[in-house]
Image (tube, rainbow, N blue to C red; front, side, top):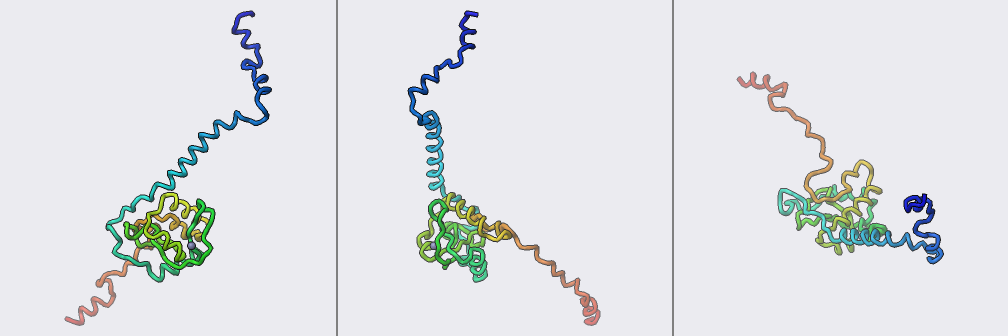
Length: 195
Ligand SMILES: [Zn+2]
């Protein structure tokens, strides 16, 4: 019973924490150090996110032969955005209060972004001008995406992520087969008549 192993078992406070507590003031210092690497890690991640550009869309041409969006596209984006500029700042917390004025290629047309609704955003003149043909970062795109999930009507949520691709996320229904000439019920009749 006097061996060192048994002695250790009976010690309730082997590191004398009780005495340590009397030395350290009430501030829970022990909880702060592990938080520092976590915070630094998050800051580094946030910093990296502001650097990483959105990847260049893999489109079948260098620049989309179609340069301009249509009037129908304008009507569409105005209704989707409540006719309000989609620019955001402060990591997405603040949205520009101005009315939208210009259709913008989210991924710049000059850099290979498609003239498609999935690459269309609605900006006031000032913010469209400021954005110019700068490639958005992944963070910009993600912030717009998160915001759009809140204000786009449910059926248009497929358009929330602007990746600049030419493929439409919600392709129109297959065109109705109009049939060939030979399906015309009067075809044979006319043919006989001609003979
Ligand atoms: Zn704006």
